[in-house]
Length: 324
Image 1: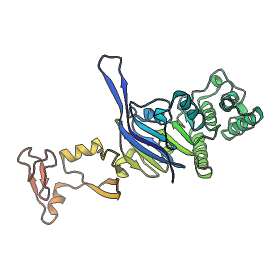
Image 2: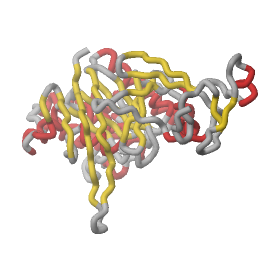
Image 3: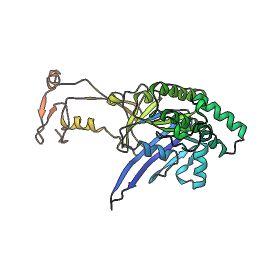
Image 4: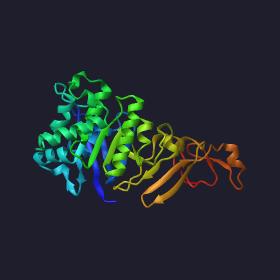
């Protein structure tokens, strides 16, 4: 597939109001998105997901790094060109909807077409088709402020797709809708993805939303830990994580695994190289001390420095790194 978007070594620092303090939201993340992919970004609140999405969509500039969209560096675009990029190439949906509250549902969608000089008759036809697809055509004359949260989200999605963008970026796209509506929307996204090749990039906390994606990338504390395939279980990310070596040849190991590696032998990890820069890291079933001792030629030895127990086959202490 052709690469649609390529983010390289993105850093973003928020300067705090307090003197000489700052927050590093992104710490050199990189990601390639192919045309027609359906990707979710998963991770806890505060991990940098929203910042990452806003930078990729040209809504903010990174402190450092580049974003190539169709081989154009949007981080260096003049503001006028960046405005056209956002208008024509990317559709945005954020959890709060960001509709104009004093305009009707119809005008919120139609106005995005008017900005591109689309004739009224085409705007009307296109807008009504999108509102009908989203199940809110009967609310076309209602002011956005009088719509329910779910209705506002569906109108926002219609507006995002109005100009047939190459990429839809959404932060919790079904966060304000009920389960039945979310299923309908996600099925619609998948249909658009398969039939017209529209590319989707979502941030989500939902198993349901992430389950529709071709792959999910896991962001923690401003760094990618790895990626996951379809049918992701957000409660058991350790079971399906493919660790990725980034463009700086770094591998980020999850904190939970580091603690296990440093402190005990209760968990062992299987490492399988899938591609030159992808490693599948998966936990083996619990191995107790007694089970290790049963293995032929394996004994438990104590580190002379930190006194942590190690396998006799180990070359280094799992806690302090002392060489045996």
